[in-house]
Image (spheres, rainbow, N blue to C red):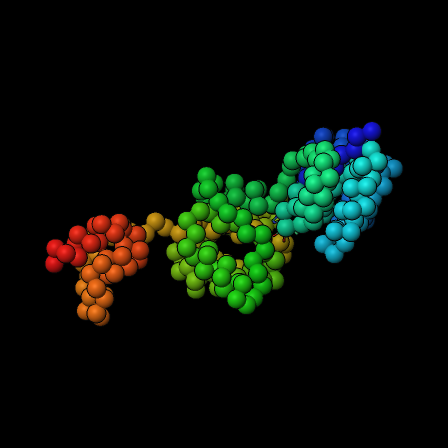
Length: 275
Ligand code: SAM
């Protein structure tokens, strides 16, 4: 008897996005681990899946449930894991269960499907070749300040989740940190009746969200930071002069300017001794 854990993606709004393979795996599973048994019960009823045992697995009991479910798999059972929307493990429970099943040497499979961050990224119109996903930003304090400063310097496209209650404050904070010109897309209610993808700059976004009474959870997609302008010889010479007038020695000044302006030490040193 070989059991398995199957990670099953479910719709983020439109039930037609539930894949045929997702239905097959959910119907075949001995247990469906889910966040909310009523919510997933309705999904299974819609898909015509009956007689599957539903078990609530959420942030607070995932570690304990993982041990129980690994025992079910060890005894030959198949466990499917879903969440309320999208892909398990993406800002949702599932990761601990996968790690526990994999660590115990069991088969772990995936039925890929909707994930709000991928959907938002691909309709944002912003570069998709390199991006970072931040989940939900920390709500406040030093951790939020650190993430915002990382985002300000990040060259890759940045994607994160945001609630409608907080989106106006977050957009205003981003505008203060990143300036008004950074491009942004706000994706809301994707795949649903009132789907909206708004595209503009952070400066325009502040007005847009202030005027909007729209509900629904958001995905925020931000363009990466622009490439810094390459330093010219004049920039280097001026920076060197600044440091040296403060008493810094030639070698140290060259090293510091090289680090600050992203140029080679050798170039900074050669300009330093040419003066
Ligand atoms: N596991 C999910 C996934 O794969 O995308 C994400 C779960 S996370 C708890 C929920 C967040 O995802 C929401 O707050 C919202 O930011 C985003 N989200 C989920 N469905 C969405 C949709 N239809 N449109 C826009 N954002 C959505």
